[in-house]
Image 1 (cartoon, chains in turn brown, blue):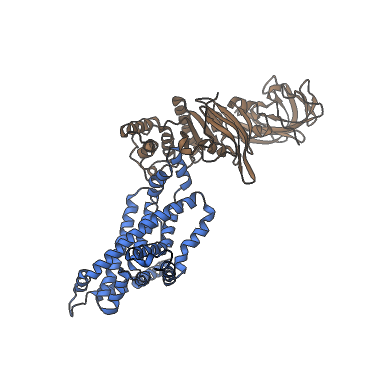
Image 2: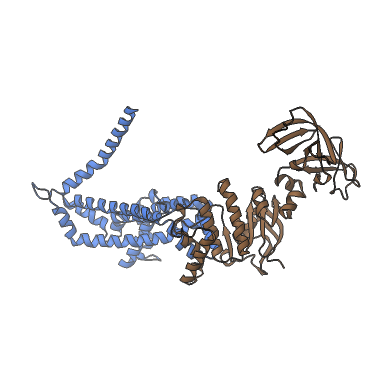
Length: 358
Length: 263
């Protein structure tokens, strides 16, 4: 039995369905991210776990106990908000100790726990400050300490880094993950930032329009996206439409040129339309790698010099792909209009589940 | 540029004169009780008058009761509307503005009709219940100021997220209101409270028609019969109001993360 079970949860608001048939089992100590664009239902699902929204259908269990209709203040779930939500009239120490005071813990225990938490977030000397005297990053660390002080069974983080600048975001996500590992707390993390989700999570739940698109490890989500949505949302991706030529061999025609896919055509019929995806980093210009099994001839349509990486757009006929190549000071990038051949391995061809028009 | 600056200063000066000259004139007049010399005799007489002490004491007690009932009524209402019923805000705002539109004399005649001694709820039957009726009528009268002050304070803090943060830490509604929301809008509540105090202290119509010994009717009585004492009373009333405003400012500076409500 999983530690956190979300069983067929649904949420409807009047005429719209925010979350549809959400099923997920989270193991004790696991770090799971909900990833998706705005309005995909990830925050609504998180709020249902926290108890701020009631599911229209389905059950939520924590450690075997059904908490579906339990009030949020009786769930023992810690929550960190995007806007920090620190109590402005309280000092940092009072904020961190708030939950313990509500639980009527002895003063000595509260003091000890607050010190422990402030040391954990590396702000041991700021207990007497007020939230407005802290930077955004410090405020979010205090919010994390406050949520952890009550020893919650599950920690929920709702886009906690969105309001911070890029540099702080990177350092804080490492810190959050470090603390989560140290405490071994079961964590649900909501984000629309794929880099955050990929770098922090044990597993990622990719969501779109209230539904789960795919659940998997960051490696699986990035390398083997199952749907066009996951493929396009996670990382940069080239999506091409092709026609199945020989399903047994994995052959597909793209703009009249044959390519081979290592997998994904099981059960497909010849002549069927299929979407395929190629990561820019898995496509090379002819000669850059020797063992490219698939070759497509085209012309250079655009060249973006990005410093360490050069991003080149190759046009075939109807379709075009972006490819990334490392900058080589001894080799000038190709010129626009130059005829080239691109290569990519059979394994790099990701055949997606949803065909065009169905 | 320089001409514009000069014009701005001129406007400021005219504005200042408009406010200051009558005050200085009133103060100067209040000191002329004794012929040929300035003295605080009018103030001494007013402050020594037992009717002043009794009426001021009565109105102060009534003002404090009005503030307590007003805060208990308005803070949870404004909080709940902000949190759960934002669509009802225009309706509540309209209701709270009614006392500004309906003259006090109409209100008090309404009260007398509904709560007279032969009605189903005879609040005017005894002095104590009439005091209660007067206090509730003051709550209604001060509603536009109290509600607006509290609502402005609540709008300046993220009520929903703070509530949810407190809930996730185990707090119930009472704890959230008393420890999170109320301290967050304390200065706004105070400014509403002081406005209420100023209204109740000077209110005449309701107290007079309900025949209660309040400060407003006393002011009217003195103003109709004496020369220098009304000026002294006006200066005292201003001093009390300014003291209240100074307290608001002090509280606003002292309390961290506070938002002053206002009109």
